[in-house]
Length: 179
Image (cartoon, rainbow, N blue to C red; front, side):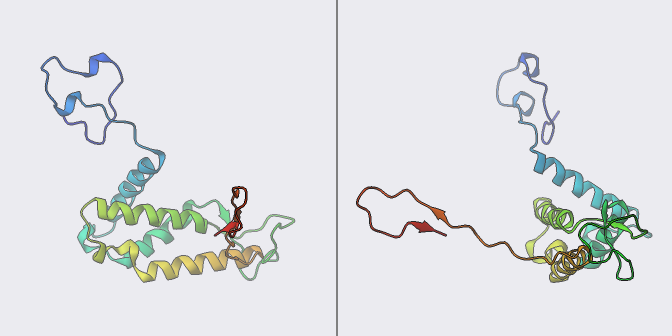
């Protein structure tokens, strides 16, 4: 039995009596939260492709299917995004409820694409053909970010890097900031 990608219960009963370095005797650490989420996302995307009519193989997938997948995920989103005709459009804290749709938050989509981009290559895809790395995906994510910020009335501003002071040894007259 191979243990690749599986957790083994800790304890002495996990090792066999035969000796040697078989897969059964090697303990693997549990997957990190990131690795678990990446695996779950990869499986979800694969299921999405299989549910298409007709089903699509990963080799047939391009950025259009990725964009469709991102739009499909909006129905499960929890972020209220006000439409331009809404009374609360552009208000960071609306005073009441409205019928505007819930969507996936930009940050969630951005992180998802990062995990899927990595998973694609880990599963044998070539970087040159990675549909998650397409310029069209970056444009879509930028549009989502801008529209969500506008709908909330909070323009997105890139955060400036903080300068950190370094402790100078006595007598050192060099520059004390680092970027």
